[in-house]
Length: 237
Image (cartoon, rainbow, N blue to C red; front, side, top):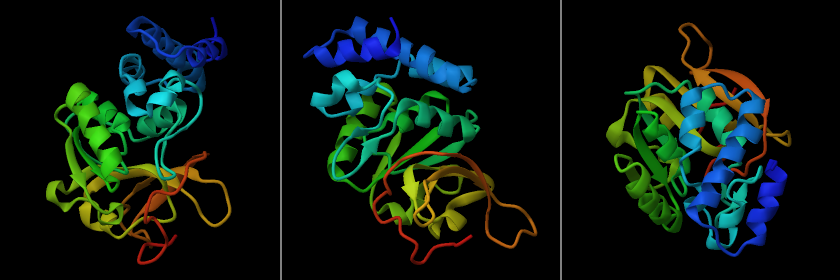
């Protein structure tokens, strides 16, 4: 059975039992992630077990492991599995690090980081999505700390962070990154400049560099802008 066949089967069922969801997760890892240079065995193992179906609307649960982003609410999406895996791998996560997940939505990526052993603060502005995310993390990663507020402000309570992860697209880095990222920290997300396609990026501080952060662009992707993530009062590059 390949991933397309499995997805069709899932979408044809009104409900699925735990065994079928487990099969879908394995197919996602083996058919979507492993052939696409996801080499971090920790990420692959966690994504074999983390139930994405609990992070989407009930009518989309059977499509939770398809190779596509899924609409959540008000233009927000749960990113496709491969995009999440590539960005998390690019973040070079290490156990014990402190991470701020900006735009945590329904909690999938926050739980993934927590299971990787990071100390996670999940920031979400949409109360409906935050409630779903809190319930999901309570079941799957209870140590995740949730904050509800404007995504453009970050979360100073647990700063500085070793990693700031944007779970969605931004137009430019907001000001809070400079204040809340540790000296040797990293920022990862998707950046859209003008009309071009968004690009995944990794950003670090570099002594003597002319800008607050040096960005490395990794690959093109598709994702909507996170709420409030517009160029005003932000760094430019």
